Length: 131
Image 1: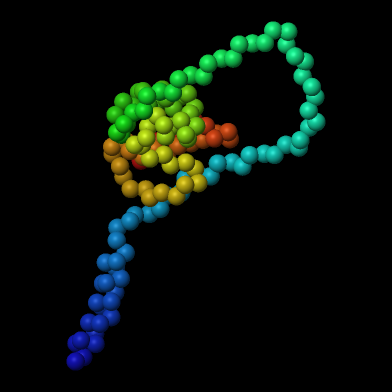
Image 2: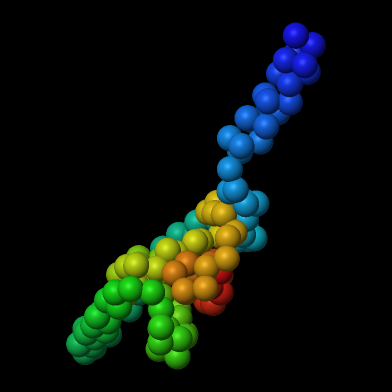
């Protein structure tokens, strides 16, 4: 009878430890600096140009790259264009984009499937790293 009373706390501790799982530590990237707010200034009418410039055509969106990043040189060239998060997700739909302020676990992934991005004040991706 005494032995069963001693095993009860030990079993409950083991059950609690087994339920925790191996989730690893959480990783929260550095927060982006807050944008400064400037007071509104009255708008002045701009002089109209004599000849209207022809509208420039927007650059065509690159074809989406399915799967994880294997061509790191092409990926770095894409990041050098400073894309927005929407452009990144359109170009690399299978790569998980983690922006500053997003909460994510920090487990090791060696297949370039998750990109922790650094962004500027306008929200464009300026760099980052795979983890």
